[in-house]
Image (cartoon, rainbow, N blue to C red):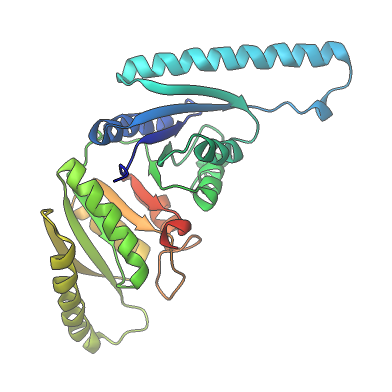
Length: 288
């Protein structure tokens, strides 16, 4: 049987959030006996920007120096965090594209990276790099934020809407919960918009009945809880509930595109923007 996670890719721009992501990469590597591949993508000074051999040679030398410094910083980061890298890759080009390419080439099972980086553009909502990788990654991603809490996972939240595609969420969440010895809580957000209040109680009862049968099927030794919360919309409901109940991780998929589903461009991206928790995101291809 294939191990759930064998190789973790940790891309870094040496930002504070990237350092936080390394803490989680190390945590996951320890729980799953996985290896970590470190990646840094240096700026690509296109030949179109210069004309003349002297300037070209200077840029090449400058790029080589930056890459050597980056490699040294990666080695230092591993020592400080007490982790060992399977491989260190320092390359140049478009960070987002290189991350996706490296994940495929190195056969990564998980990409662990910060949601925002050093640039001003990266500090607007989800960073542009993280956003691109999220949309094109062939493997699950763990997107983290710089926080005060120590990296630890004891309570996992799985937003759900009872569609058939959510099987992949439950399987991934169970694997994570079993490895970390964590509890699972499946949450349904009852959006108030469009519903008459007199219907809410009946809807709660129906939702909880569904949870009872589904939770029994997938428990398999993991503590499984279920809950329903009321909110104006799903992203706000998920974020508010996760904060109030002190969760450590949110697991979401980007599979279906039905009403209320967690697809890119709506709930997933909004939760990633709102939440201070790490979010484990499954790519669309995992639902095929």
